Amino acid sequence: MSVQVRNNVRVTGRADGRPMVFAHGFGCDQNMWRLVAPAFEDDHRVVLFDYVGSGDSDLSAYSPERYSSLQGYAQDVLDVCAELDLTDAVFVGHSVSAMIGALAAIREPARFGALVMVGPSPRYIDDEGYTGGFSAADIEELLESLDSNYLGWSSAMAPVIMGNPERPELGAELTNSFCRTDPDIAKRFATVTFLCGPPETWSARSGDPAASSACCPRSG
Image (cartoon, rainbow, N blue to C red; front, side, top):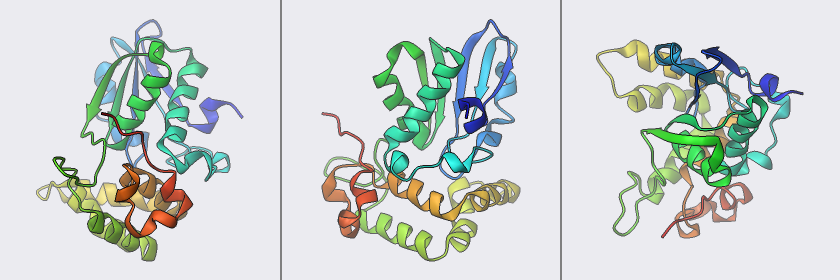
């Protein structure tokens, strides 16, 4: 199976333009960029894709082992870059994709000329001297809620995450995006995303192999 089919890769813009790769966040797909990416097509070779397990990617290519770490998603990015022979690309990553892009750039720096991080967080769990936005207990509760009722969690959380109450249609769109994602894959991606950090932040899930392999390397 080609990477272009596996990751539902779509290329627009100038064939000779500088590559610009847009990467979606948790629970989304490339459709989230539909109002943004066209603005760059006059000057750039614009690349959109879906991570395996999201959007119109080939779900048969999903591997719990590969995607038990953000490195698996970084490999998706590198596979797309290799398939299209991209170098010096501008990588635009939303939410967790900001860190996925950083991991990809560390592994193959020649592929990337710039990283644009939209709403990035290297870690979501608070620590001494660091504010991630959530306590370990908050994350544990979030993941338990997602485990027990994914569709209910999606409907409740999407408007909160969107944070734009005067435009409820945006929250509804995100809810629909969440609901299109396979629940089991979404749960694994959420675990990888929100438990990214050192082992002491894994709380009650420290015995879960998926959680124990979800950690990104901690710098410093």
